[in-house]
Amino acid sequence: MKTLKLATLGLAASVLLTACGGTPSKEDLAQADPYPEWFYNPTVENGIAAASCVPIPGSNVSVAQKQATANGRANLAFQIDTKVKAMDKTYDRVTTTNAGSSTGGTFESVSKQVTQQSLSGSRAIKFERVLDDGKKMMCALVALTPEATNQLFKNLVKSAEVNLSPDHESVLKEQFMAYKAQQELDQELMK
Image 1 (cartoon, rainbow, N blue to C red):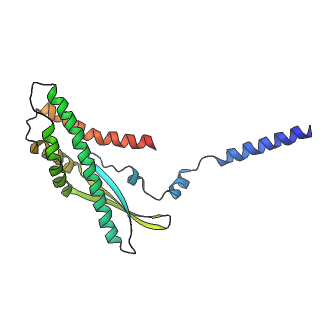
Image 2: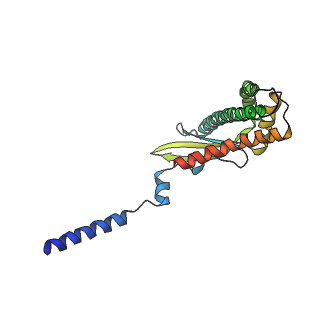
Image 3: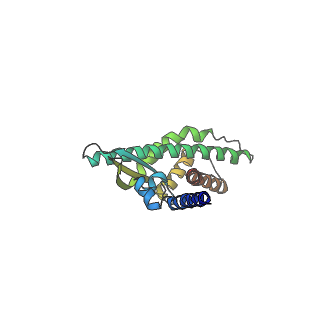
């Protein structure tokens, strides 16, 4: 009987200790991860955004800001190039469903040139200093505004020298904008 009471007491104690352990609170998680949410999920409404964090060399914050911004722009260029490839596939599908004889290859050839031109419209919209395991870091959120994103799309279509009907242009633009939303959803699901 005494053994049964001790076993029951031990079981109750272990259940109580396990229940008290629980999952860490959001505040605890925030303290464990110093990076801002926008670093993991860079977004700007109806635009394109990218983020980057770099070490701060000594006390030279301005150098770190410039480097984080440059890296953010490089990430932005990669995103745009990926979106252009997705748009190219959509364009190819749109043209093959009609009697037209155009091909999507035109978009591929102009994408890099237009991407480089469009990055001049990008800017850092947020900076944040973080302390990561004793190391000072500078984070930058870089974005193309909705206006710059629309201009990028128009430049792609214009540079490709392709005549699109308003319906096809609308489909192509939706695909261009939807690709980023799909990437963000995939990122959220991976968390």
